[in-house]
Image 1 (cartoon, rainbow, N blue to C red):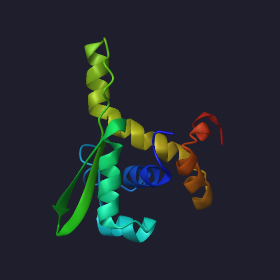
Image 2 (cartoon, helix red, strand yellow):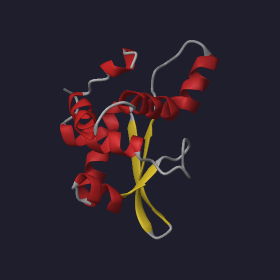
Image 3 (cartoon, rainbow, N blue to C red):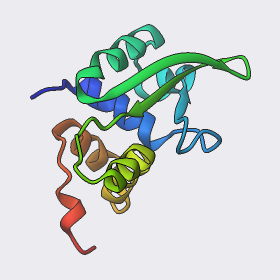
Length: 129
C-alpha cells in the first residue's frame, strides 16, 4: 500500500468535511475540529498531509478567522493529450475526488465508512443502492 491508515483517514476527512466556503477551489478544515473528530494532533495531521505529496495531495496550513486550518488539494498530474481534458482535470479534480468519497459513503454507517477509508474500498461506487 502506498498510504497508511492515518494518511487515508486525514485525507478522506479533509475531503469529506471541507469548509463549504472554500469548496472547490480551496478545500480546508479546522485543525482543532480534525483533532477532536479523529484524535490526531494538529502537528501530526500536518505531517501526515505533507507526506501524501507523492499521491498528488498538496497541503498547507493557514489561518481562517483565527483558526489554524489545513488546506488540502489533489493536484492531478496526468499528462492528457487533449488540452480540453487537461483543463477540465485541472479545474475539477477536487470536485471529482470529493464527489467520489461522498458517493461511496452516502448509504453507509460510520463504522462502514471507517472501514472503507482504511481499506481504500470504493466498490460501493459500482452498486445500485
